[in-house]
Image 1 (cartoon, rainbow, N blue to C red):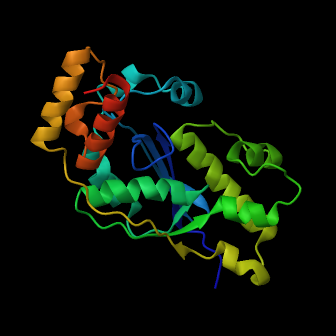
Image 2 (tube, one colour):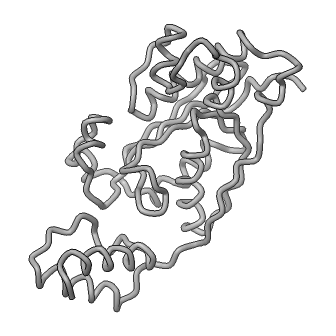
Length: 236
């Protein structure tokens, strides 16, 4: 098998690390043909929930920048068209895939992809660079990198992948560079019920709570977790 040089590289910025409770705030992607970027995709997303200070400091994305941006459901069709049938490349690609798979499933869309993980390749091949974080690998290889912004990470990851191919690809470790099925099991989630939204409104009003997430954007499971959190903090 020849090494993959046609692919889409993708990266997300999110409100946190859990696809079950956190949300996407930025998507970046680049379509690559014969090792060269031929098109890019970039979109800020309104998550309809607060950004914590750590995320703001890390990404430099301010909450007010997201207020007039589309919700994720509004951009999935455009992203789906951009991705096409391409193999995905990313640094810790399973993280990005888990968020995307959940989003597509909740919109009643299938999202089955194969991917190549530059983190996996680097862990096996770049033995003299202690940290395998994208920032550290970019310093190691002298790659320009706008860290923690989706498209900046994508552009850096494309160059990183091409450097890894050039320096390390050989038949005996071909498996590292071979696309693998990306797996994340998730079922479609229903919106929060009217009863849940009424309970939330009652608790929020009773205790004068500044809600950290817009109740109308919650799924049934998210609303249940949020209610449990409020009850444990404020009581019923």
